[in-house]
Length: 134
Image 1 (cartoon, rainbow, N blue to C red):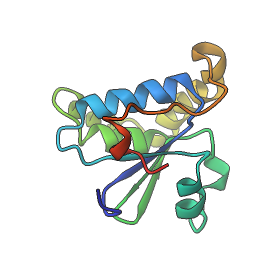
Image 2 (image 1 turned 90 degrees about the horizontal axis):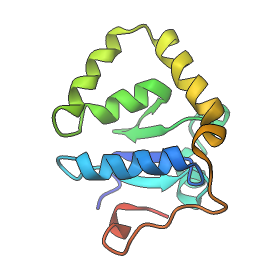
Image 3 (image 1 turned 45 degrees about the vertical axis):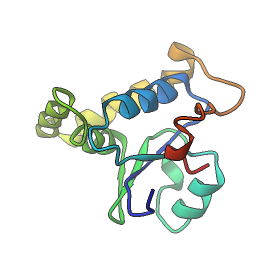
């Protein structure tokens, strides 16, 4: 693992977010992604200098090559690195960002009600632990 690897910051108590992380792990063709919950020390340290505080915890955040991606941009950037056919989702970048983010925000706003939440952050299995920074 290298800190140069793309890092996905996610809401660690959100069932939808945890399921999404598990989906990415399964379909990450190059095994390049690393993960950190937004509630963890890594997120606090690495995102402190970024202008993302208004996005936490309501957005997935991708830090890749020093650039921050959030909301639908993060989801589509992540999809572009997944195995086929998932990388084809990148065609959704043609949908105007305000519309994509509106849909994203609707899901984010209702995610706990629709999908539930955990009392604590999900803990990866010992086999997956190396992919997580917290």
